[in-house]
Image 1 (cartoon, helix red, strand yellow):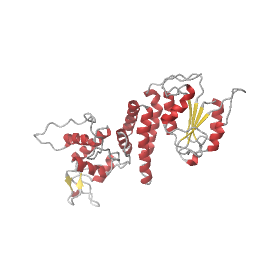
Image 2 (tube, rainbow, N blue to C red):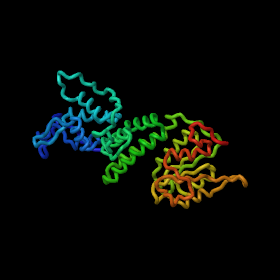
Image 3 (cartoon, one colour):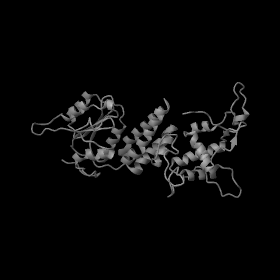
Length: 372
C-alpha cells in the first residue's frame, strides 16, 4: 500500500516545493484525489462518484483548478469507507458522513457523534442502485472487480486492499458466525478471492500482498471454525476421509474449507495439505484405510488421472472383506472427460453431502450418527 502522508509534516497541509524545502502554496489546500484514493484503498473513480452522487467531495481547489481534499474532506471520506464497510448502503453512509463532518449550518440539527454505530441497511435497494433499483455490478469494493455480490464481500475487499489484518479477522469470523461455514465460503470468501486474483492478473505485480494476506486470514478462519460453530460428535472408530492436493498443486484453501465443513458433520478427516507427493499420499491411504480420498487440482497441469485411478484401485483388509476408497477428484483442474468414472461435485455443499453418505448423512443432516 502507499504510505504517502495525507498532509505535510510541517502541519501546514502543504508539500515542500521541489528543490527548495519550502511549502508549495499550490498544494496548501490538501491532497489530490489520486493520493487519497491510494490511502483509503479505493479507486479515484469511486471518490468522484461519491462527490457526484452524494455531494461528498473536496471543498477546495489548487490555484491551477485541481481538486484538493482538506482534512475535513478526508475525515468525511474515511467515515464513508468505514460505514460502507460495515454494510451500510452508500447513500445512507454518505448522509451520516456529511452530518458528522460537513460545515455546520446553525439551523441544522446536531451532528451525529463520531464513532457511533453504522446505520442499519434499510429495506430499500442495495448499494449502487440506478433509477430502476437494480444492483449495478461493481460499486465500492476497494477498487476490486467484485460484480454483483453480497455486501460483506465489499467490506472484506476494502480491508484486504488496506492490509487491515484486524478488520479482516473480524469480518471473516462474523461471516462464519452469521451465515455458517458453507455460505461464508461460497458467497463471501471465494468471490473476494476471485476479485483479488483478477485485479492481480490485470495489474502486473501489484496486489500480490493483498492476495497473500487475505488467503492467510481465510485459512486461519477456516481452522478456527470448530471453535465458532456447533459440531456433531466425531464418529468413533469410523474410517476417515483423506484430503490432499495433487503433486505440484499449491492451492489448498478449498481443501481446508472442506475439512472444516466435514468437521461440522462429525466426519473424521486426515488433511495432508498442498503439493502432496504421490508416494506420501499412497502411504497415507494404505495406513488409514479411508472411506474416501479427495484429490484437489486447481489447474489441468496438476490434475493426475493416473494417480486418481491408482488410489481408487488400492485395497486393504482381510480376504473377503477388502476395502477400497471412494475417490473424489475436486477442483477446476478436473474436466468431465478426464474424470469419467469418478463422482463429481459442483461446490462445497455438494462435496460435503457426497462425502457424508458413508457415515449415514445421506440428506446432509448435521447431527446424523455415522454408520457402523
